[in-house]
Amino acid sequence: MRILALFALIALSVHLPANAGESVLTISDELGKKEIKELLDPKVAMFWEDQVPPTGLTEPSRPEIFSGIEANVIPFTGGVKHCQAAFKKSLNNMVEDARKMHYDVIFGIRSVVQGVPTSDPQRAVCSHIVHITSLKFQVVLARTQAMATRVAEEEAQALKEADASARKPSAKSRYLPLQPILSSPEAQAILGSGITWHAGSTSVPEFALQLGPLESEGEASVKKSGEAGACKDAVLNALSGLVKDARERGYSGLTRIHSYFDEKRTPVESDVECEISGSNAHVMLRSVLTGAN
Image (cartoon, rainbow, N blue to C red; front, top):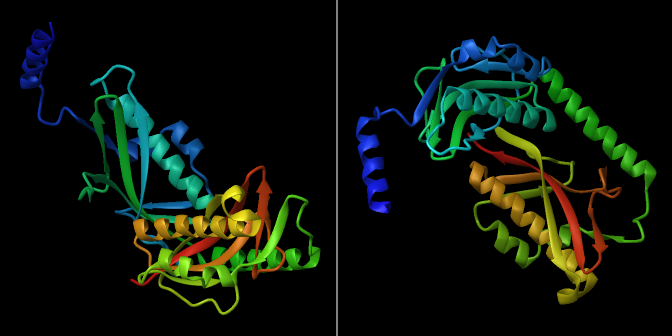
C-alpha cells in the first residue's frame, strides 16, 4: 500500500505545474480590502518599494524581515486564501512592531522569495510547503523628526519619573550595580570582538542605523550561585539574548542598555533590578541595536 501511495504521489507531481508551490497576490488589490484597511494604523505610514517616502526621516533600521504564516489543515492544499491570510498576518506583525518600538514610518516594503527581494514591488509571493503557507516582506523602519523628538522627550520624562519616585525594590527584588557586570570577563566573552556596548542614556554615541528598544529577559538558578551570583548570571543571560539579536539582525552595537522591571524603569540608571522568585533570579534588560551603514 505504501508503494502504491508513493507511485500515486509521483504521478500526481508529474502533472503539477512548476510553480504549484507558490501563490501570487497583487498588493494594490489586497490593500484595497476593508479588513486590511482596518488592520493598518494611520499613525504608521507605509510606503511600498515603488512609493517615495517623505524626506527628513531619521534613525532608520537595517532592512528587517517580517513573516506571515498560515497553517493548512490538509497537506499540499495551500492556495490564494491561505496566502491572503499570511499577507494580513505579515502586515499586522510589522505594524505591531513599529508601534511597540515607536516607529511611525515603514518604507521600502517588498516581498521576499527564497531570501531575495522581488523585482516587482506590486507582487507578493507566498510559498506553500506541506501544511504551511508563508509570506515574507523586507522593510525599513524609521522615524519622522517629530516622532524622534517625541521619543527623546518620553525617555527623558521616564528618567525623571524613575528618579523622582526613588522606589525601593520589592520584597522579592534587589538592586545591583549594572556596570561591573557588563564590564566583567564573562560579559566580554559574550560580546566578543564584534559587539560594542553603552549603558544608560547619557553620552550616547550616534549611529547611522538603529533598531529598538528591544527587550531581553534573563533567568538563573539561585541554588547554583546564591542570590547575588544568580542575579549576575541572569544579567549575563539577558545580555546574551540582546547580543544574539544584534548578530542575527546585522548590528554591531548595543546602546542605552538599562534595567526594566514590572513595566517600570529602574530608578537608578546605573543599577539593575533583580527579582528572586522561588529558586530563580529574573532580570529584564532593554537596549537599542546600532550599526554603521
